[in-house]
Length: 291
Image 1 (cartoon, rainbow, N blue to C red):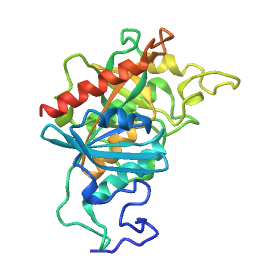
Image 2: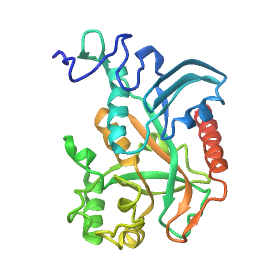
Image 3: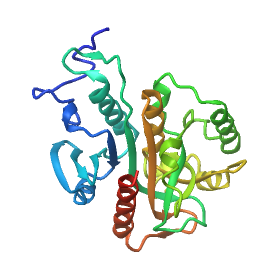
């Protein structure tokens, strides 16, 4: 097997991948990702016990046990650029021999579940509700740097999206990837399901106007009005499409679940977003523990 050079995969002096500062034995095979580093402790405090805690930059990781399940929760920070780091390094921990710097002959599949926040794009999805992303639709360009091709259903969805929204002009070449059916089937009751759009920023890329004018002032309306058969866009945020796309390419099961803290159509914001996030954390851990 070809050796991966030191410049391409950085391993620190304790034998851990550079950004996450994790060694293979410190990672569980079921992983919860959160954007906010402070949210790691909000998840791990529900564990029966914690085995490892690591911290480097915005990447904080706790690995422990809940019931019969060994879990890792890791913060990603905000945005698809950070997802590129986290997904590649999580995969390296299980599928690359860090001593020989070669890809292992037997590959391991991880379960990666994003528990985050999001803004709803449909009036009938209220604040403090929960959305499961059936697809991640990226207008952030991350996956365009990798060899990726949509399946036939995804190609049809994407072409319809481009035709209806015209977002490919001057902004990006959109891409789309479905979530893991293996994981989605566990998150049905009391969850909304739909397409999640991933944006490369929080203000202009999500249609917010402060002091700057927008090149696409009708972004919210175009996303809300999109329809393709039974599919519609339910929400948008800044990580899902990268998780789904890289996860698919690397062979992992990925799922994104969002607590809706804002509704961009009705202009409402949650009166207690922390309570909604805590409820989603508990619900997610209960479902994982019952697998």
